[in-house]
Image (cartoon, rainbow, N blue to C red; front, side, top):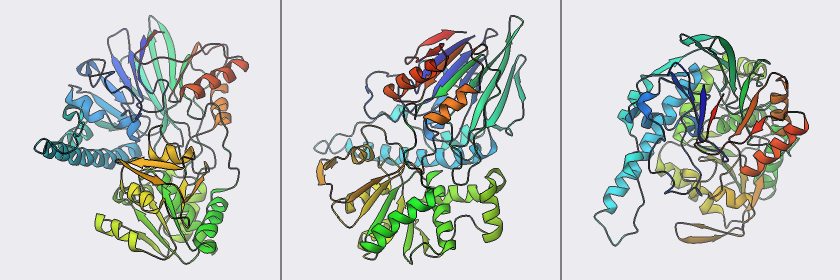
Length: 471
């Protein structure tokens, strides 16, 4: 069997790993979009460095677009097989891929208009790499959902099992069992490993301690979570400092799926405890509205605390002074809101979306706090804020940073170094033949490799993009 690494190699985004078995069955693990702003745009003119029509099946670890967002393109290129996922991953992919298609349509329309206005700024766009609503509809028809911990047969000699990964509703580790030349082997894919005691989600479980090969993410491969306080205490403190003491506004860039729900749930808990001031909380993301309903629907998939909270309070997320904004007009009107408030909007990296307008409208306001709660890719505005830039740039304009920038990892959905090491250490050093590190920045991968080798795992490899291995 051969494994090829076609994404998330020495970077965090674009997960895509191809298994080619001796019986000519080809299984693709994840099919994500690459959001790395600093990558060489001319490096790869093809959508895929393999023949899409030769892929027999796809397995999705979870719904985030850096793991699922290239699926419609895979079908455009000729893929005709099944896409295996958990039920919740399918429902989240439904809204995420449709949202992505909608953004593609807007980008394409701007591109077409620019062709007739040569004096305007040239818009760089590859229309061939875009997919639209009809492509998403066709993609969703190929999904087959399965329950976690249920082994299914996808080929005469290949079995698939999902195991709860935390990180996001429906997220899973993947266990692939196969037989070749009379030998049974098992390969595991971590997907994105969640953290323990995260709001709403169940704790991640380990893959069975009998793997022959492991592909492991390394996002936090060289750091531990720095904020040891509870999400409630962190949020309560920054709200009091910003909205009560300064009478200012708190702007929180947050991904619409996962982080926004964790924030709203935590705010609801503060509200029930009487620890949330009488201020408006604006959730400015239509996608967040849709995904919040999915989280409510899958209550049985959440952790025990969340299930008990919903039973007692009827809803997970709805509380006094929470306002969902649907239209762009309502979003822009927030600029005229003069009272202390909280604004939660996407994207989490401040890389497009409605949150960009909120950040830029408030970045010169010393009474505003911009709270960064997750990983931001280099090249994004969020990354510049995390790095403490005193001046940021957007669309040719410069903005002095006078707002308070508060960075916390208490809402990060990724396990830290200790979680990653624990995940790997569940595997026997004697039986595990190879560990492949993916989905991390180069330094994080290098350091994680050193950490694992110090624990006696001397079979660690950091693949390069498009590199293949015979196993």
